[in-house]
Image 1 (spheres, one colour):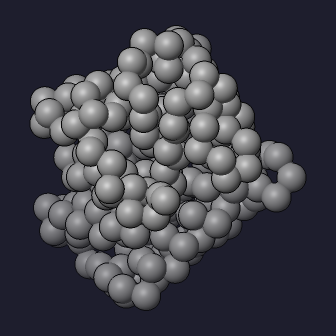
Image 2: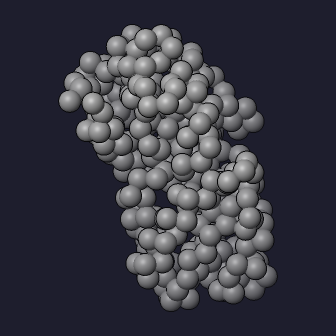
Image 3: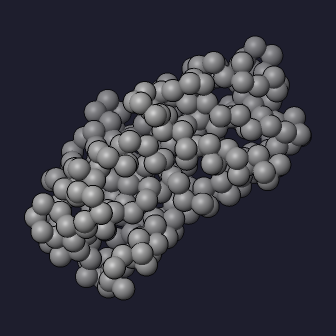
Length: 259
């Protein structure tokens, strides 16, 4: 097993050139993991704003780097684009500069994510004195306009939450593939809707794009009254304090499976 105290942790967030809040959850997680002192170095980098992956790798001096996509799902970005940016080809864990780079699965596909969402939604139901049987939980995944989409992770989360039967119904929509979240009214007849974005960072989508679709202004969580419905909008999952532990789980799983 690799000694993580001699390895570097590289957290890879999405980032945004248009919304500076997109980087905040990944930076906070990097700071928390530095505080725990488990790695020789911890760096945060982003896909859409500096520091980019190549810049962050240049700042790391360890012979082994553990790269964790702090992203919501297993789409083409995670499967193809990020490994290429890390200099990885095939299953070979050697980057362009000869260092060993271990690449984990994304945080958002961790099996504890459904429990995290359920706990958050149950707390809202309790605090607002809602009847669980009358609630539709509307999950919003990012999705992808690229061929094949990026729906697998979101579908698995939705299935797990349906199996737990803690609300009346669970619906699923996406930002960039069908069924689109803009058409949410057609996905449920429930009069009480709790929207849970499957987004690590709220960024432009969570803070600006989603609220108006549900009669809310940016920064509001609800309730909003729209078309005879009451709607609440939860924050992105990246703000949950348990995410740091999920990152460490991803690291341990990767180390356990590495030769």
